[in-house]
Image 1 (cartoon, rainbow, N blue to C red):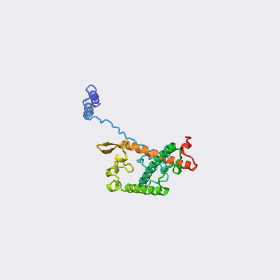
Image 2 (cartoon, one colour):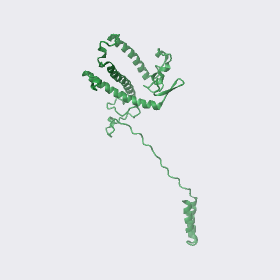
Image 3 (cartoon, rainbow, N blue to C red):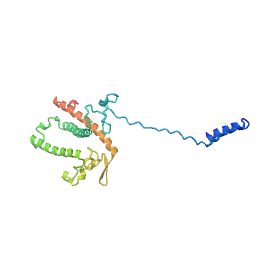
Image 4 (cartoon, one colour):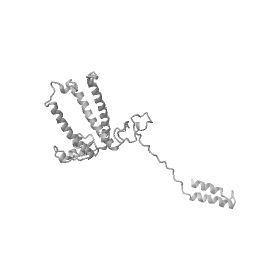
Length: 257
């Protein structure tokens, strides 16, 4: 572009069209055009938009903290901004509530499977299974309740201590039945997801290389989301099962099976 402009100005400055004075005036812009560097090409900066935070009411744009709480940033698996009571405003409480949700959800998933399989196999409603004459009950109710409270209390107390002091329970004295405390250490580094050879023996969220458990971050994130979704459905299912049991009905009976 600069070369073309110089050629045009040079032609206009010839003696056939201009006098010597005008020729000097036209020659100056010509020299400036030739000496001027080429203009730098324009650059366009593309700014990626931030990922849209998922909402439990996707069709509602307003609502403030009821629909989009400011203390929930979407970093937790399954976080859709549902906290109408504001229980998670305190980060410490939010961490504990997530731990409680995860533990209750895992128990609920195990209970739902046990209820369906138990009734399908024995034909006895789940809320009457322990009262059947043929039920295997080598202990009295009081002995069974006391043993369960003792064992569950011991396990839950260890989980409570480990929550506030991570990895404090993966030591030899805290795992007397295991020859190595590494089986109970947190292989993923995330609270509630210990992984490792003992808690992930099938390697769903990691792999074993030379006897060492190596977590797979991508698989772990996908499984965490799937687990919390199934856990919430299972807790709702158990709530329905309780209402049905109050009416003398069972899940399989409600399904006509």
